[in-house]
Image (tube, rainbow, N blue to C red):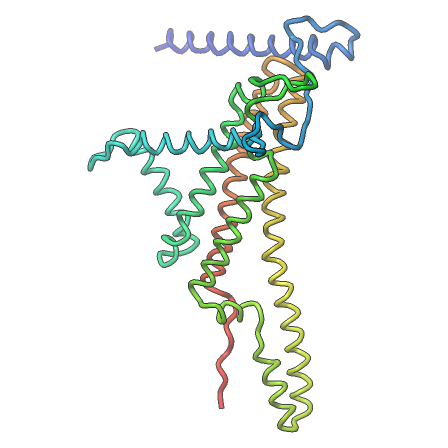
Length: 320
């Protein structure tokens, strides 16, 4: 036991020393250290200077439609997800194997998360959309950390390098499309659950305005003025509520796009300034950020869906 413990300590110490040597080598001889110390960067540490291009680059065209590197990456995500689902569920058994157990664990965890917020009544309605958004955004983020993203590509007409794969979440069109789907689903759930007029009443409460005009016709001036004034205020507040629903599309889009793009730029800059292993901790950070962004996007869709299905504003009953 003591020999095994001593051997493990030696291995750990050796690995630590190697990592420190690699870190110091990249720090001193890399572009950052070379510029500060006035020495030339060795050829084996030369890293291509990062070129940040916010719009996605076109790889080829089909009938005038540009196939971009982010679109190809999003297709890869779909293929990976479908492939994983097929592999995990192709041989379903009463006593599940490892892959089936993994798939059931993921689905059950997401379903329990949805049930904890939406309750048993609405969970089955909201779950497919929330789970799809979470898995899609998460897989997009994690695939973008693979080595062939940003390194395999073609040469453009002007001689610039165009990567074949680029993180799909860094193309603003993809977060925008998911945000629109989230918005449409939330509004559809509310309309289907409550009906058009009742769902509209969750935004605009015309009760006080109606009572104000009724009081005006009855000659009750003070209640009429109060009812009409507060009725128009309710309509104005309802307009703001409608506007806030559309603003969700913008906030969803730029939250995901901004965080994912910033993470990609951070990795490119760190890898360029300090080559070798300095970027490894930032890859761990991006794993966390990818998970959080997927959870936030799916979680907000879940919360807004619950609010749409169980509105907070109900018109009070009138007593005679």
